[in-house]
Image (cartoon, rainbow, N blue to C red; front, side, top):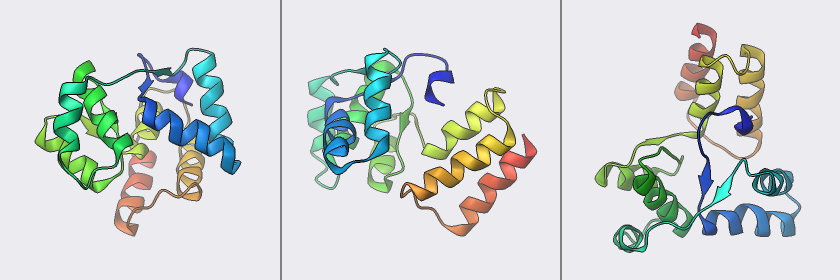
Length: 148
């Protein structure tokens, strides 16, 4: 699905290590998919600027991958995709545009890149992969899928 999104798509080195290197060791399918997307140039690994990264890392509760993601997004005037509540709060503090994972699905549906059934299937896969939300948000996402 990510191939169909318009624009450049980046991930920072720490996220690459977590998703691809650690993911392959643990046998996660998304590790191989992500690695292939990088090899084909769909995703690019990019270092975040150190100065902003160092400031964001001062917030001790933030995970290193999330800190790099926010720093990179801010430097590129891009949207950080994060579901982590700490990262979302810090993104707001630094005026980093951010969206949750489910918004990728809604954006693709809205752009006509996927249909409603594919959107629902993608949402189920997101949940099956460990993404969590409350019942109200899940119902709201399903409602938005039906409305688009």
